[in-house]
Length: 359
Image 1 (cartoon, rainbow, N blue to C red):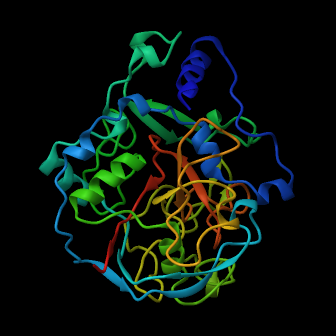
Image 2 (cartoon, helix red, strand yellow):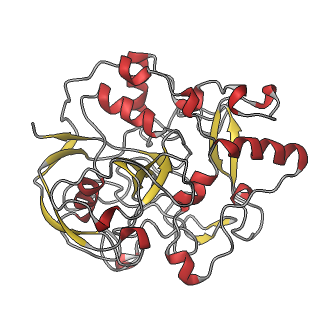
């Protein structure tokens, strides 16, 4: 992961190429996740992660604007994705869940109370990036930038840009702000940043099983969390990508980027944006083989992380897809599918929501 920044800067300086995935067949795309390509497009900031979270006082956990999920038994996973197999029966205890993704306004209150600095805002250590000029090592994050024409999917740096100064309160980099976007989901947050907020709020990040149980909304397994039709009654019910990726977003759902929370219909549990809008961090570490041996009650993920695509990276599960997902390229917004992200990575289509245990 850390090599990305080296490659990215050297690409700008000396036209070094970068490759995420080979061009895919339809069958291969079924097993793909844009989260993987995002992971290949992020600089690791492992060395920048300080003891910030440990210094944060744990909050009392107000359940205002949370929904009580009674828990129960459900069928978890999907046969359409290799790392989501096998489908298996899981039971989860009841829990509280944020009705929507954590917003800019909510994260602003957290930062004001704690002076917390997100990973995207922290300095980069030149020792971690050998061969990269020190003046190029500036804080920032990844921002999706449409291409001017149709391109192959071989090089994600055609649409992912590492933008200096991009962070939760400067979403597009220097000169941008969240003014007027207080009710949008906070973005550019790493797992560490999300976990720190959850601790301050007296909550935690959801387990992958809790997240999927909540997303199903008591309706069982379907193609999408909202049902089996992409456009029920001819209407878009989630913020995903329409058109040609990555050059021409038709914005048929009204948005080219993240939408304000509660823009689209809630599921039967009263939860918004469990599909699309922004990816959401889960508490679980990621392993593609975890479902083969996960416990049947309250699974909390494996004890270690392993991704054969990046064996040295520590990754956590992400769920729900984002405004960049569509059947053309990223299909991991479909029910039962899994995303993954390196712990210290962030982007402008990645956020989170929290849960709180009953006890």
